[in-house]
Length: 102
Image (cartoon, rainbow, N blue to C red; front, side, top):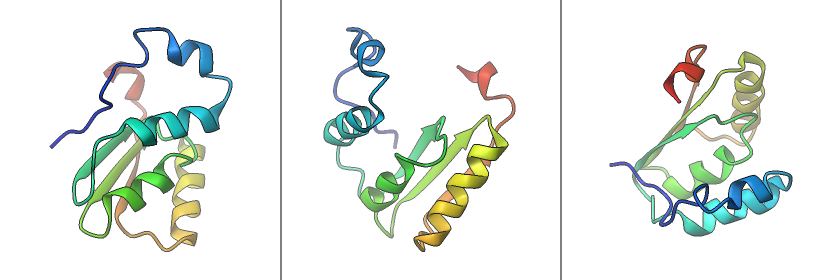
């Protein structure tokens, strides 16, 4: 099952206006994401895992997060951050072709 925000925040320019404040974006996404407990979630462009650490908690032990990024360094940092927290329900994927999938 694929979950998505209840509204498309990029269509009304919200993302363009708020891109500077990462914490606000993260809170917005967390507040608008439907219940993902026990589900599988794809995070496309995970960066260093700022949102990923929230998603793994939201999907719970029975769910799983697949987090991808084009940057090997970002994936490495994200993986370390979540391993340090003991999360096992996440798989990081270094995707060098990610730009071609947008």
